Length: 248
Ligand SMILES: *Cc1c(COP(=O)(O)O)cnc(C)c1O
Image (tube, rainbow, N blue to C red; front, side, top):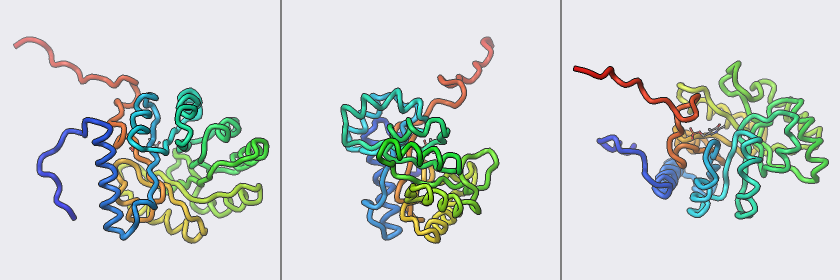
């Protein structure tokens, strides 16, 4: 293992620096794992980021982006798509069945197929559209009640159902539980993908890319590592800490 930089560095100041840093992390993990970096696609997760920030990364050579909400993608992406036809767009967040047709129209890939009702809705939408996005089945790998994703033990049945409905699922996707070491969850998902004969593995975000690459990720999903830190959740603008009382 490489020694960490002794002094905490400020976050990379520019998109170019962040991208170079991310590519170096992936390259190093690939070297450690004996993998070719060309096997690891970077899906830059652009949720909450303005189109200008996306265009900056496109100019730097990023050609695959992720969004977690259909509504946000529908507002942001038609113009970006028209200007940059070579760029691919992936849905990485939960999908409501009533938005299946819109998602099929907007996205090149959907990472969040996770339940029978969505299989049926997507099969209908793909039939009508005459094309299908690349599909990943999202697995609730930490068995968290509040989280999206198919239960581990129900995944084979969901895949069978998708194939019966004419949908071809190519991979698995997961978001491990927050606050726990991610590697065991990535290892479990990779093992499931092996057993199910699925070649693609969407796993790894900004904080756990290395473990994901080591365990076979084909698609990593960095957000803040490329776009910078997001403002604190909840407030939209973040909240300043309370000022100390004046005086003294
Ligand atoms: C937000 C998000 C990411 C990116 O998270 P970062 O921690 O900013 O890298 C990846 N995948 C999904 C499903 C997300 O919602």
